[in-house]
Structures are given as structure tokens and as C-alpha cells.
Length: 123
Image (cartoon, rainbow, N blue to C red; front, side, top):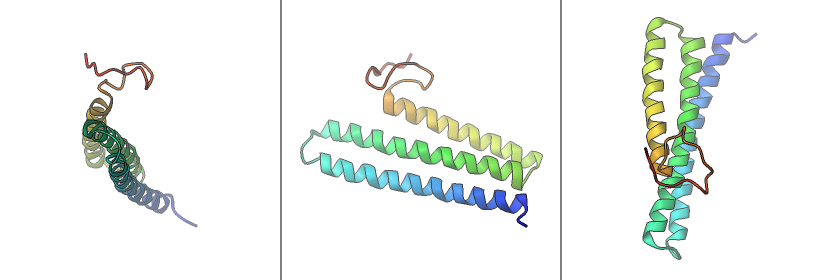
């Protein structure tokens, strides 16, 4: 029978690998799309689309990495020190997610609106 610690560790490692893969695949996809767009679109449009696609890949990958950190801390290494390290890691990654969201949309994540109605207003 598989222990819960082993299952949690394998799951956490799989999520870490998935997060890294998502970031790498997102970067590759964004680069290929930008290269294709460069043939027909203006430079600013290409750059804007490239940043948006790249940011989305990074955000999604960060979510998987945070999930792996949580599983590792809670199930594999439950100690006050590891919980403190997890807290710092989650704070840093949350800050990165927020700043990427602002870069991509020009709005804070908690500001409402649809994708089409988002304007570049950070207040």
C-alpha cells in the first residue's frame, strides 16, 4: 500500500514539473504566435500580444508551482519552518501574479469588468 506521504511527494513533484512545462510551453507558444503575427501586424500590436500571451503562460505555471509547494509543506514536510517558508514563497508568487495581471490588463485583479471592457486604468 502506498503511504500518503509518498503519494503527496509524487503529486507535488508532478505539479512542479507541470508548472515548469506550462511556463516553457507558454513561452514557446507566445513566441511562435508573435513570429506569425509579425508578418502582418504592426510592431506595437505584436509586442502587446506577445506580452499578454507570455504573461498568461507564466501565471498559469505559477499556480501549479504554488499548489506543489502547498502539498509539499502540508503533507511531506509539516514543520513550522516549512510553513514559514511556504508563506514567504506564496507571498512572492502572489505578488508576481498580481504584477503580471496588472502588466497584462492594466487593472488590478479585484477590479471588475469583462475582458473587452478592460481599460488601462490602475487606481
